[in-house]
Length: 248
Image 1 (cartoon, rainbow, N blue to C red):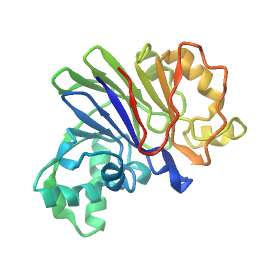
Image 2 (image 1 turned 90 degrees about the horizontal axis):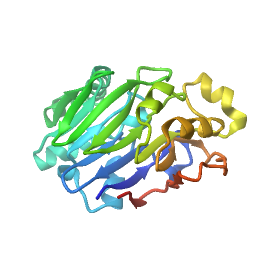
Image 3 (image 1 turned 45 degrees about the vertical axis):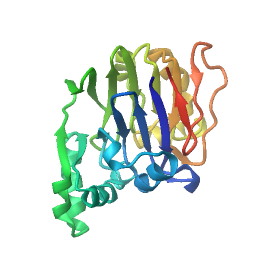
Image 4 (image 1 turned 30 degrees about the vertical axis):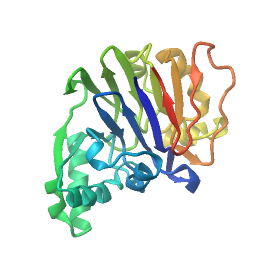
């Protein structure tokens, strides 16, 4: 059993209904949170029966606020529960979290964080039969995309990036690809300039990755137009706050 729950799927500036990026992937043994934008803790409690102490790992892609500004609140509740939260991220993201906690005048809350540092290009054993590999994303700041292997199942999570052939080819045949589609085709040049993907590139993304399921994410302002000529073997998962999809 592998389930995906969407807590939020908007960008930093988007329809308030969308929320900010955060997903829960879980099987019988682990529960992994991908990114943690503003409001993630409240969405977790609203959308699921889980609390912070149920989450095995929080995996972060980069330091933009719509991906990490949920962390201070999560650490506050971790302190309330007297637990440590395992946060997996590149070193520059951990440094950003430290600076945010200092700016909020709660630097001591870092004691409730177990820092796990990951580097691009190396496969990291996250848990029993769970591996994570980071790829340098093509964004405007340091950022990564992730290949998550749970047993023989592969899941790709792009974070914020222009289409990256190396990442997409390496996750070929994935069960699931969550990939940003920030804008409609007419805004393709603007999306590329800011290190994002528009729906103009969806066909290329699917051709390279060949996932069974595809979920677009990181909608800017409003949801983009998506092409309807998907390869017949790819199933579109429409994102919605609090939606849960059983993948296998």
